[in-house]
Amino acid sequence: MLLAAQDAFFLARRPRKDSPHTTAAYRRDLGGVTSLLAADAGKSIGELTIADLTVSALRMAFGEFADGHAKTSVARAWSTWNQFLTFCVAEGLIDGNPMGAVTRPKAPPPAPKPLRGEDTPERLLAAAAAGARKARDPWPERDVLVIALGLVAGLRSAEVRALQRSSVVGRPGEQRLHVQGKGSRERSIPIESPLERVIEAYLASCSKRFPHHRFGPATALLLDYQGKPIGRGALDYLVKTSYQWAGIRDQVPTGANLHALRHTFATRLAEDGANAAEIMALLGHANLNTSQNYIEATGKERRAAAAVNRTYRALNCLRDKGSPTPVDLERDGS
Figure 1 (tube, rainbow, N blue to C red):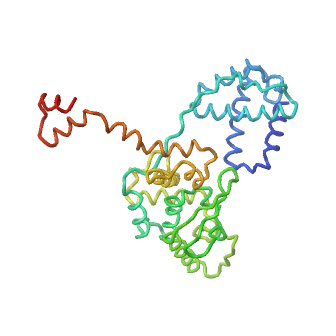
Figure 2 (cartoon, one colour; figure 1 turned 180 degrees about the vertical axis):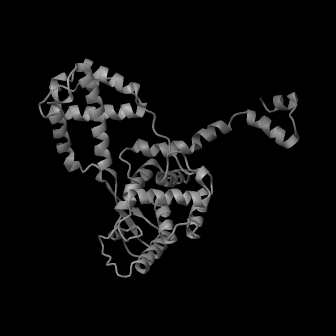
Figure 3 (cartoon, rainbow, N blue to C red; figure 1 turned 90 degrees about the vertical axis):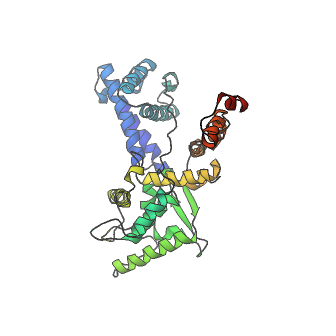
């Protein structure tokens, strides 16, 4: 049965230690197309078998799936089914993978979404340090650390929440963050003295807030107001309200929250000359092309190409001499 094969697929993936979010996305992709396959075949989902996964059936189901989903969602579902059917081939459940005959949409690479405005990160940090976020129980040391982990370490939300006290390793002045990243990929991020001081101030504030709490190496680095590991919702709320109280909400791209800080980190790296391999290592990307997007997004090469446009010389005439005459334009080669 098809459902039994899908269960076996997820069982085989367990050693990969996919995140709950990744597993849920895979299940949605398989479940959504499976429902369409069943409807087209006039069967219940439980009655479907591997033999029902013909090229024509998959083409029809994916066509229907595409009608109600964005291009990126269809591409992700195609990838999920391709992996599932590759597993089926390896297990001898099917002779060949039919997904090669099913059209896959080419999704554009996602554009980075950094904070807008040259001084926006600095304004955000200054506001957090000054206690601008009006909470019932202000904790500016924690606010600054969370924002800094995004802006100068480029951490994802899940990575921030997974940090332990033992994640900060090394001697003072040579410390680094040991990060358990996406897809269980580990990386080590060097941190400089300013961030070391932010961490020290935050840890000192924890000792004052929770004087009877016993902290150990495995204690979560980021805590909530009860001294427990901070949750996803609480972390998101902290960042959103930090934007609001800093007065920069309009500088945050739509749909971005803590990830906007990560994108700002990567974009500034690219602007300051870091190459794709360096960005890949610091951000924990699985694909070099993802890191390359930040370099392309800075537009340095495109800006240089646009700058040679001869019409700019005519605009210089407007600035330097007032409106240019035809003779001016001809002399400038326009």
